[in-house]
Length: 266
Image 1 (cartoon, rainbow, N blue to C red):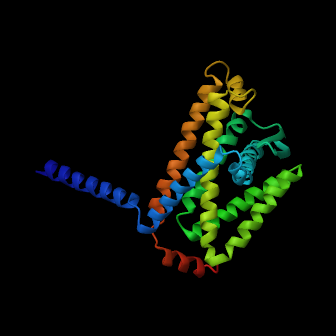
Image 2 (image 1 turned 120 degrees about the vertical axis):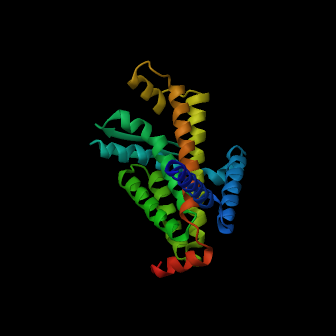
Image 3 (image 1 turned 180 degrees about the vertical axis):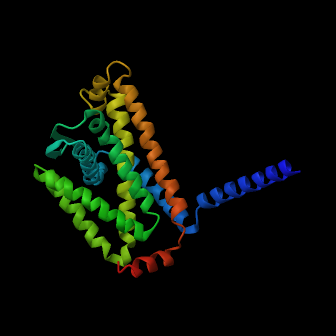
């Protein structure tokens, strides 16, 4: 009878784990609102992205995500002992990070994957007011590093502008507005990375993109388009993981979240 009893206990334990996982990923009423807002943000971004005049609204956020892309190159460069010479963002929504040294195998994919990871972190933290405030500090630190390396006024202007907006929203209505602002930047960064990977690396196969340089570095094992598809899949996984972790980690209602933020003096 012992083996049967052990198997029964195993089935009960497995069912308990499955129920716990299901409950963790079942959205609360407040989380349902965040999921709806994420859907609205995605729809609005996709609509405004290609409209001739309306897409101007997204332009500052696109430039911000370019900055996060270049910051990711730079910070991984620092971690691999590179000397960062400059970061520049141009009005055509392009950017460049100049560095000496480092490990190209790490720094080349860091732009897309790093900014996708940042976007996913911001989305995850937006399920909670206190977490979104902490995420805004993290984002502000990223922008301060970008300002340190910036060599043109557009890059500096984007950094200063978004830091100022976050400081203003920090104190407005206990940070509720900051939460939705951080969420929009997270969704925007994730979508921008996904779209840019497809547009530059898969569909158009842009000359001397990060993927083409990475493909040359790796030899003939895979083309730049294959690397682009791989990076796209990883970025998509980051985005989905950010949502799922946010659902599982932050179950508090709005009132509890505001009390938590107030309890920390924030």
